[in-house]
Length: 391
Ligand code: ADP
Ligand code: MG
Image (cartoon, rainbow, N blue to C red; front, side):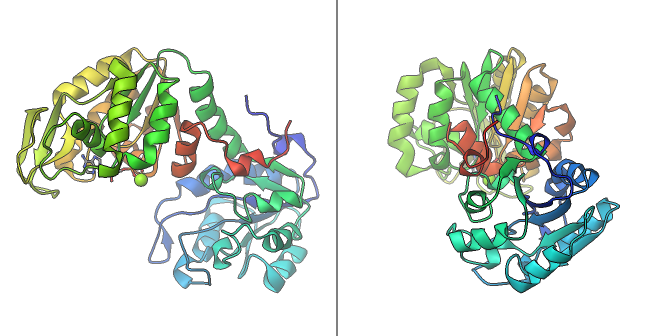
């Protein structure tokens, strides 16, 4: 299934190994506030250290405007990493140029060097060959373990592969195995759950999953655009007007395989303590918005989920950040956690929701990549993966 070489397929002992990791983690007041992605990279880093490689880590962090900005520095991440492992962690103030070259040159086997944010150079996102070559010059081998960035062809994810032998890390392998298997060879019945804010970004996902899944359960703001296509007045609900036409086409082609909520929770304000109403789906009063799926929908969806062999879930069922509108997402999380199916969850907010529910350990695989997991569900090839050596 996963047909790319990994670090197990090549010699790494005694080599300088440049590893693209996804250290794009939230930082508050200079302190890492969620270390999921750092921990997810540890198996690859440890394997390389155990095999006596010198490990050079590079990553982007946030969206700097093209020059260095203190708040997007990877230094706090390097310091945090040092608290997790027992081997030396060094830091270079730049990812290319003299600082990087000197630090990489001095790096010993069994040590790690963290390079500063690759996006401090505008060339990174332009996939500039010169920047890619400079990065490559620091090492003997390149490893891509940054699943969360694999959907982007940037200098540190794609460009660099043109200058070094390039293979996948363990996180990359794991992510693609779980997501790939769910999409290409799912244990049937395959049930997809799709929600989130807007339908616009996810139309390709719905289209692709309609060719694979037995049932697609729709919730969240995404359902509203389908309701609009059915002609319901929706009050102040979030509707993606540009997508109403394609939503209408999808409803027609999918038939009963695409399920919409039968009841909803509405409110006039999206804030804790807001007055809420639960209603069967129908015209939404002026000034009110659909903010969650209702209990009958949760019950109906839970029955489908209970019979599934494979479940893929992207997008919360409601505005789960506000307790009043979290019940739908929580109810679906319980159903997924309770099923015997292979379950895969991807998407920034979806992952936050499952973690908030306390049920994360009941899920087969929680993806570290939002955009990358969506592109896989859409059936697209990820450029950062395509560029790696085939087995
Ligand atoms: P993900 O990051 O998992 O891919 P999205 O980014 O598409 O998900 O959407 C997540 C957001 O959708 C959440 O912040 C949630 O508050 C919002 N959302 C869910 N349902 C609704 C709704 N009915 N109206 C407005 N926003 C919603
Ligand atoms: Mg999101």
